[in-house]
Length: 405
Image (tube, rainbow, N blue to C red):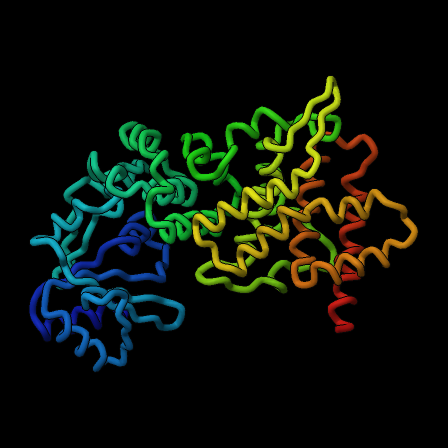
């Protein structure tokens, strides 16, 4: 980005006016000089169209983000330059409208002057996520999810005032533009290397306002097959998948990157991670108790209906919805094959592959995470190892099935 910044300085010197680097680039560089941000946001206080022409003379290609000719984006070599027109009278007023103080820092481009009216640098040094004003989160509750992403990514903590605002405004998250909610949700999951998002969101009383039945699932689930409640089990399965992604757990003959693909701004593995967390979301509605006998009959179908409504509410991409729905509705399928007669395994494998086609591998991996998470607590017959071997054999047969086509 060094060359881009130098080019921006030349543009401003040519057209006159001021320019300010803001946002994530400034924040990440202040957190660690070794960070190499791939996005650069510059606010221009000058003739916007003339500045764009000067950039284009330097071989930058821009597209409009909106119709008011105030935000332009240029993508190059996997990096993004975003140019926005200063909408307030001063840069300080612009910074006052931002979410957290660590994002409310600007660098004046020409003289390299740091503008930090809300002590963002001090908060970064002390690893505090502090809202800019009393209205910051109230004006846009989606900022709660962004704050949790920073909490997880940077190992920071919320100030007391910010945490109070988060707890008070979490109930309004789903009233925000659905695209913004979905983008933030999936961005967190993508960056959640240690698999702590859902428990963190629950800790701050956010998750129950985002997904249905989160509190209720903590009250059911313990039975002869499960030592923990449904919520804990779902979270453990999500942990298992994240460990699988990081290579802490391995499945022979499978590399997750081999079948990964982008769906919009996210990858199919991000949506698979989400589906693995919600795989048992139908257990509260399907819970039945008859004396000591507890059952969750048809919880897969119930969960599929719940998640269908949720995905529709947030406008999930169709390809992403198909993965999530297939996993939630059919995650028990491989386990049922495993528990059946050992003879004829391959025949049932191929019946499964023909039925679910390109979703087979997602369901297989979700089933592995589900059973592995269960057997971490109860495994008297060493079933965890046996099921791992079964899943690995299933994957081998799936590769044969694909290669035959």
